[in-house]
Amino acid sequence: MALAQRERVVAPPAVRLTPVSQRAVKLARRDDTPTFPDHHLPHFDGRGGAAPMRSLSWGLEYLCCLRHLSLLIEELGATSLLDVGCGDARLFQTLLPNVTRRLGIDLSERAIGFARAFNPRDDFRVGVADDVAEQFELVTAVQVLEHIPDDEVSSFLRSIDARVAPGGHAIITVPSVVVPVPAKHYRHYDERLLRTQVKESGAALHIVSVEHVFRHTAFAHRWLALFENRFWTLDAKPLRRFTWNLVWNHLRMGTARNARHLVVVLRKMS
Image: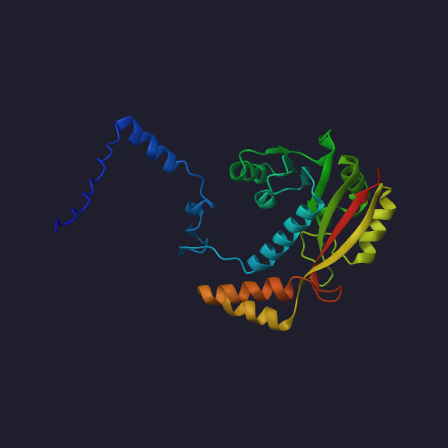
């Protein structure tokens, strides 16, 4: 009986890159946009010391509010957005591709510089809402209203109203009265104050929903402080996952008595 011949496997010839193609590959790898500018993580702390990383005690609260806001924007289905007081435009990185027109505006040149660096395909300007001529399906003002002087609140709300297209929406987020007012803020909010300011402004925007976001509890405060405080930072992946699940599933929504933020959706009648 003849033995079956084994099939001979021939390895493909090695591909040799020319110097030009090697440069192209290296350039593509170097130019691959990072998710964060890691060169800014190690830093000098201003007290003569050096730190290999940065940590923010309010980081999970911020991420919780940011994700909640991005899901809300997704539900509204807007395709154009103006973010008033955009800062570094972290919000833009959470938007779906269907938001094709994105404009951020802020008084701070430094903030707009960061925004352009992080979002090179989007449009950013130094200025105020009144400098924008066009209208948008959605206008956001995230943690901005508390920075507006009392005698300018009505005009600020009217300027937002003027940039909302008929039938469009605005989203305003503010810190609640649960949080002490720092020196840089003029006031913090409860629902009654916000409704009063919107009504007195004469804007055509009508409040359609008010949510109380990020429930503050003594247990949550102690738990988060255990991992992030002025003495140490603990970063273990299993504990990180547990803590985030705690924040998102149990602390995201609160009440007027215990939530740290108000998220308000307004609609402009067509």
